[in-house]
Length: 261
Length: 247
Image (cartoon, rainbow over all chains, first blue to last red; front, side, top):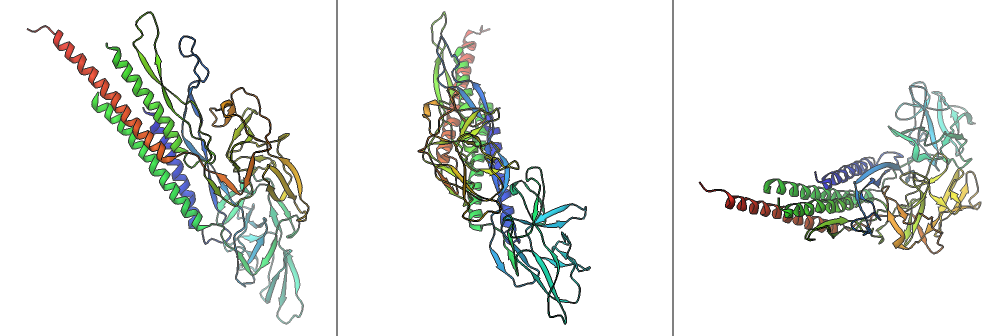
């Protein structure tokens, strides 16, 4: 069969994956602290039909060989961890991390997941948790008679109770950083989990070791640039169309041969 | 059987090879740093103890196009593009030095600087390993300056330099792994005149319209070969008919 058919097929499926990535980025353009993905294309291996430098006929050396490429693939999707915009919300429990760290949350199975979504809530037990219901680690208990919660830049959480003049410290939020955040596993629901590629988390006090500081009363927006994604969408669609044109052309060749012979 | 049938057939097969090369170029129209391949046909005469009447066509890819692709701004500080001529040196799967224009760099878990597909980037003296960093900046000459983790903004350290080369194109060849290698297998010397642009990646240098035109042209060429085979068959039919004993 004409190998151009298979080559263009790899082109179609790679463009399809890229469109998937673009669509997911665009769908999350309003997701708090969402980090956009980028599809990493790589060319597939080449098939050497005739090695360059071989002998052709009667002591004639081939100046160049024939190497047929076998197409393209999306080798990886790379997360871009650049910061999104910071939006003021003035809500006491909204926090944003200015820097590259992550909040730690406890998953139901007892393992730790990492998130930058700081739209925190209190659950029925008064524990600080994410809007997805996962408790922030280390756990911070807020009593029901608290009227004001203050989260400092270094993560210290202090509260003022009704009738008290002074605030008292009830806990501290730690931040985790990774050597290679791109290697984190995206678990959905704004959560990331540790992998071998990301390296172990380095947990510390916000503001130290460049983990980032905490800003209260603000949220980090998605870092998706919608214009950029739309342009990506157009180039992807055109590339897809051209690859399908090649399939049509290669198919035309085969069908012509079959009809004529 | 008439030899012409085999000649026409080889023409068709070689046309299909040529089309595969263009299809591969077109499939990589979005691949970072991809360099498109040329294709040409050459006449290959068959010699022997007979009249040398048979000349087969043979498709080959004589070279790779090294013109610059589009520069795409990403703003990511680990994305670098070679401005003008030159290549970034990386290590291939067997540890040999190879060359690429794909500068979508990353730092892996071991702290090593690798390309988007995971190949270690070559520095002036060996692979590049980085400590945990606050910020990283790659300058025009490939020098990597960092602010170490927890360091103040003015604590800039220059760590290593990406090996940039600018070889004679005649000495280059794209190999099966899609990377550019030297024909003589010798590693190249660093060239201080090659410049990097940080915050950009270089797109593919495939000219989509040109590739489409080639593909359509090749499709027609294939049809002509098939038509030739059809004509040869008709000739064979006719001569068979003439030679048939009429009853």
